[in-house]
Image: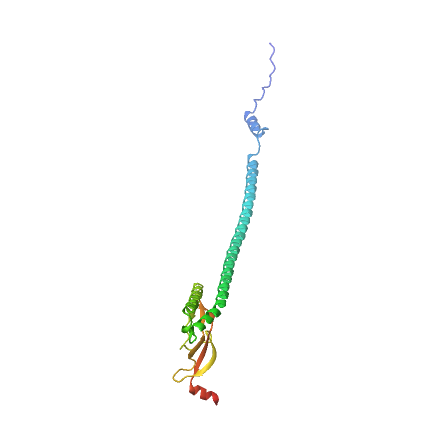
Length: 210
């Protein structure tokens, strides 16, 4: 009987190597996830940076606008105040001019009323002069104009205009002994100085002659 030849056995496939090989070979669907994430984060940061820069630019524009608005508002307020002051000065000057035109008329009426023999004039004429004088004084009072006392007061060049000196016994030097024309105030400001005669003692007069 003939002996059958030995048939070599086929080696069994290395399944572990195949599995590793299959795991190591990337498929078309697999992509590098880490790289994509980094790129996405970088894009997000760039977008945020642009938005922040834009916000800063808008904030700067807003601050500049608000600053200009505040300056414009302040300029307008100052303009209004200047206009009010100008109107006030113009009104004061108009009142002052009016009063200075009226005062000479008042002076003439007072001179007529104080003239010796004025009481002997016709009663109707005298009352008419008194009425006009009273109305003019009333109009002046409405403008804040009033006379101030000067007689027997010390002479003050800020309020008095000395037109003469007169010797007076028992009267201190520089005391007003006669008012030739009344002085007037408008509010707390001098409108017209008083014209006065100032006392000069005999001793001062004698010293002045040496």
